[in-house]
Amino acid sequence: MLAAVKHILVIEDDPDIVELLRFNLERESYRVTSAMTGSEGWSELQREQPDLVILDLMLPEISGFDLCRRLRRDARYQNLPVIMLTARGEEADVIAGIELGADDYITKPFSPRELVARVGAVLRRAGRAERRPPAAIDETLQFGDLSIDPTSHRVQRGGNDLPVTHLEFKLLHHLASHPRRVFSREQLLDRVWGREKYITLRSVDVYVRRLRQKIDISGDPSLLMTVRGAGYRFEPPA
Image (cartoon, rainbow, N blue to C red; front, side, top):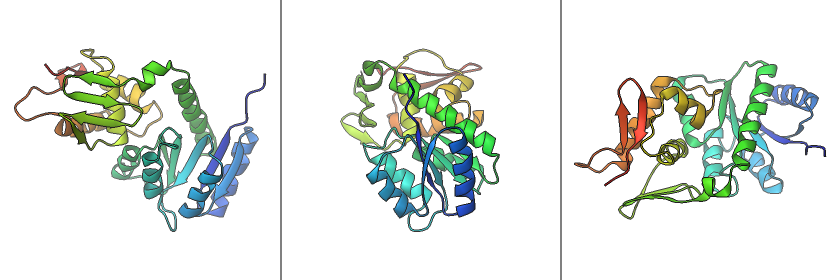
């Protein structure tokens, strides 16, 4: 049985880059459609949902940041793979894009072969996630007054919603799915972000620190424990 052709939506305002991407992706048997503005891209998504979006950061009408934020707030697109494409390569911009829910990030000028390879890697990761048993994805985790709901990406403690980002949720859910198990920074990069991410080991520490500030209660032991020289573990509340 032949595999279905994967559909890639390119949202990019530079026609030369669009054609470069189209040529290289179609050569690898992907089906490619495109949009020149954030608004056109949103309209294309309503018309037909692709398997992956390549999203420029600096778009007219609706920026790539805002469009990615809109995607992750819409239940229809929360798991849609997104690769951000931009001329800006500062680490702060990279982290901001990843926090909004982008699955990967590549800067201009780029190697077409590298981008095609990253498209394949992101699609493979998305395929593995789809093949997991439903309970592993959808089951709400409950630890005392802490609730972690993967279907809505909602975290509550003491009945209060906690404002976690998309990547903070993924990190918390992964750790809480394996309570008391220690994960190294390298393991967290691989299992939460993926090997292709433009994220450093130091950035993992930043994410953990932000997450602690949101989920811990003053005076109580931290739920995210640092294991010196080893990594981090989730310690369920008493």
